[in-house]
Image 1 (cartoon, rainbow, N blue to C red):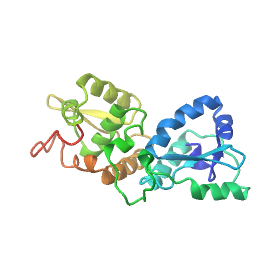
Image 2: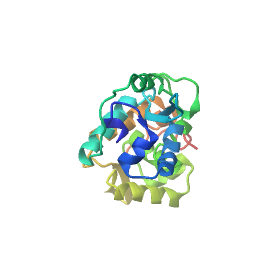
Image 3: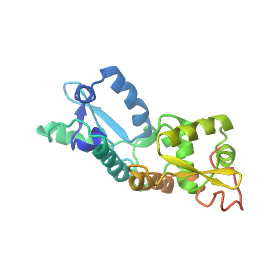
Image 4: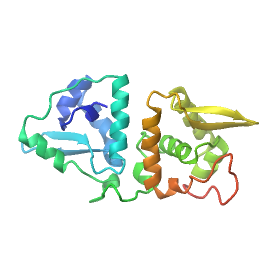
Length: 223
């Protein structure tokens, strides 16, 4: 959220000051975000590290809208607009692809492994994106589709529900999972996840599967 509202790259030390965190904690938090490609960093001439949202990420615009909406609810400290030419130039170089590949345009496609750490864990990411892809699903279908043990799926689903991101609805004897429409940034989150589903073949293949449409080939996409 802090990076989304700055309009310029930040030094790691600046980001640490704004968040009131140790430099090492910021470095640790950036590792999965850089691996996914949603954040990118570079070094200045004096060997200081700049970091910014990666404008080459396929869902960059949707991520920016989501993060700014969340920041409106949970305001973050801000710094001024770019003053130094070097900072403005750095924005042009902070463009990197998910999965540490050399280049990727916003129109290119991803594979599921590219975004597995987007929400800091493979099960957490795959459960959320699968729910977004299928619209409605349940723990049994997620377990079979993802190849993740059922207890892990339950734990992840319960965590997302506690955080208000998804909800469960009773449908007969099933606990049907879907995105929570009352989430504070529900439209922005839906568009962000939808964009990732659209550019990731494995998740796109799940779009026709749901607890209301059980027919067809199933449970083979993300194993």
